[in-house]
Image (cartoon, rainbow, N blue to C red):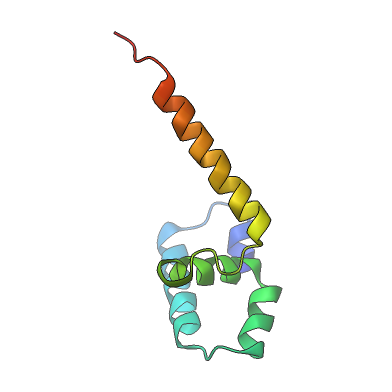
Length: 90
């Protein structure tokens, strides 16, 4: 259901979405780690992204390929540095 809501072309009720995400998050947090969980996360990208967000404080971008994650971090640092170098309007 999370995948369908994520891809819906129709507006989604925010309360319904939050309730569903909370339920999926609770299931992910209580699920035993292993091949079955990996299979679920490989099948459902929205659940995998939620899982990664839930575990970010412990493992960073644990399910993201390293190269794109590193490239995103480098690009973000470059953008921040460029913004700091720009003169501020008077």
